[in-house]
Image (tube, rainbow, N blue to C red; front, side, top):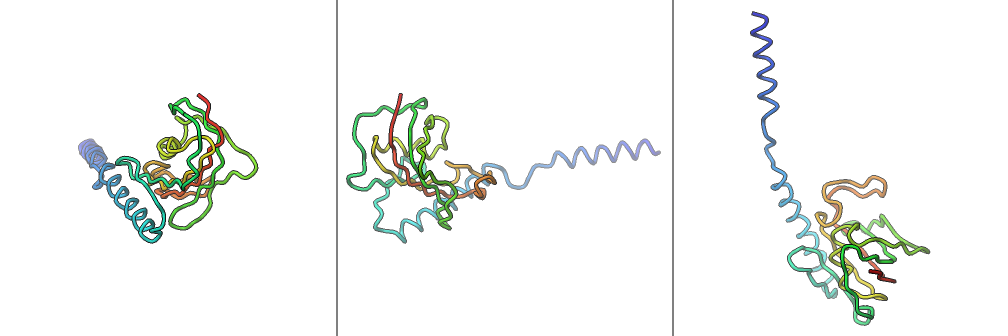
Length: 166
């Protein structure tokens, strides 16, 4: 009798472990996508003087002010190295989570967040771009504790491009 109870208990535990979550990752992704889109749309409505352009259907917006496009001919690839100065803020709060002051780091374009991969090619060396990046093109649902960045943060980057190397 005890063996039968143990077997039934084990079967109950196994069956209970197989129950799927009520919210699939795709549903969560789409819900956050809508939230991010609303945050950016509200921001752009409140700041209607910004001449923001959307990059394809990504939800990433960029702003390049007149005279700040940079100069030269550049071909961007995933292995392109970019030397930049930047300030990164959370769009909703204005909290600065990252900033370069006196140094200008160099990154391989293919190794930075997707929002940068899409936004930096909008300018040339010497140019400045402002990027409004939905969370899915930044760090997504993963908090970045080392820089005090909550999960699903919509980001606002000011980037100055100093050099491009292929």
